[in-house]
Image (cartoon, rainbow, N blue to C red; front, top):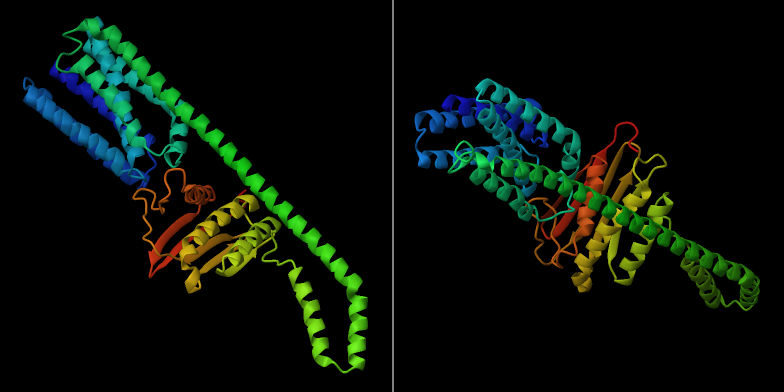
Length: 434
């Protein structure tokens, strides 16, 4: 019996490591990740020998060794993930639950058939079917959600696999097994089905909610672009009207200047010329770059900075063949610009400044914003992004910048140095991106 359990557990550990390998975004190369998983598999099998063959009758040994195996499994899942956070922990806990179904299948088949070989083959088949179904149905959904911030507190969601695991353990394995209480078999099967349905429903619900949120923010983005273009249109329209008036009045100014020349009133002539130049400058449309949408949004933000008395050092360059959406880039730039404006608001008496560099070409994208800061800026330990001090309803600008950077395959970095906050998004493109 011990050897049957040993082989059954070994099969479960194989699929456990396969599940972790397939449902993880790897921090290391595929070969190194596989080596870590194989090492963890060897450690799990070694501890199985201890509790099943060396001390088969020791409840304390079984309990302690099981805790160690749980730690090895969860540590492996978190260790090989690109992001060592609560999502990785959730995936590790879930992997333990999925392989329990195959282990339970081995026990049930052995109870009803009395044939160890048939039970092990059946268990292997159940494990394989579960892994294939999960890989086809929810693997893509899970990997897409892994880097998203649509659900912020995954520690609470980790309670779901924890309670499922505890339920399986006390229902089918400890302190009494299904061999001791075969009447628990129907309840265990229903519990397994409930677990799979729950996971699929939760992940699909999260995917639908993300799509709804994505559509909402796209609508907000396009509304912002349209509103900016409308503002630019009205500004151009007003400027054209003012210049028409100026052209109409030029004959009066010409007559006035001729009369003043006859009187040799050169100082008055200078004042008239200065007035004409002032009217012309007031109605000049500033062009920061060739992209209409980015230029419009940036112009509006420059107006805000001018009203607040903030100096903006800018270097805006866009190409006709830029690889990113003008609307999306304009919104990200606006978010970072507005964050900088709010950050330097307390330096109004000390000549505050903001530096913005935006280069968007066919080959690369560089968006860099620098500004002074007074109060300490807290950073999120997981994402590395600054945390908003205004509560959970704020901070979406930084999340939007991170999502944009991920979408274009770029890198986002931010840090504080000598009283200046720096944030930069950089991406180098190869071929057509859109």
